[in-house]
Amino acid sequence: MKSAQTARDIFHRAVADYHTHDDIDFPAPAPFPAGSPEAIFYAKCWIDAVQWHLEDIIRDPAIDPVEALALKRRIDRSNQDRTDMVEEIDTFLRDRYSDVTPLPDATINTESPAWALDRLSILALKIWHMREQTLRRDADQPHIDRCQAKLNVLLEQEKDLTQAIDTLLDDIAAGRKYMKVYRQMKMYNDPATNPVLYKK
Image (cartoon, rainbow, N blue to C red):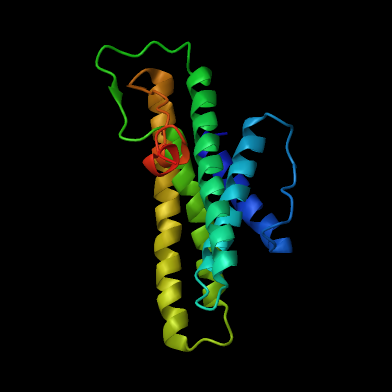
C-alpha cells in the first residue's frame, strides 16, 4: 500500500477517535505497535487534533487572560512536538530509501515528504470540521451551502495531495528525487538563541 494512502487513512482514524472524546486532555490511544510508521502517523495527527481545539479555545473573547497565557504556552509546546514528529517521519523515510542511489539528474523537492504529510494531517482535520458545519441544524442554508462548497474543495485537495505525495515517494524510490532532513531549528524555543530569554 502506498505510504500517503496509508497515512491518510490513519489520519482520518485519529481525527474520528479524538472526537469520540472531544477532550484536549484525553490521553492519546496507541492502536498500533510502538515505533511503527502507523503509530507515528497516528500520534502526529492526535497532536494536530488537540492543537486544533486549543486554537479554538484560545480565541474565546471572554477567556481569562491567565488561562489564555497557559494555553499559549501549551500551544507552543504542541508546535514543537509537531515539528519533532515531522522530523521523525522524515528520518524514517530517509532511512527507508537509504539504499537508493539518486540518478545523475535527480532533483530535490520543494518540501520533504513528511512536511507534505503534515499538510495531509491538517486536511483530515479541516475535512472533519467542515463536514460538521454542513450538518449543523442551527445554521441557515447559505452557510450550509458555503461550507459544502468548501468541503468539496478540501476533498479534492486531499485527493490531489495524496497522489502527489505518493508520486514523490515513487520518485525517491526510483532515484529521480532525493531527500534531506532539515531540522527546523526554531530559535524562539531555545533559551540560547531567543534574546528575550538569554538576556534575562
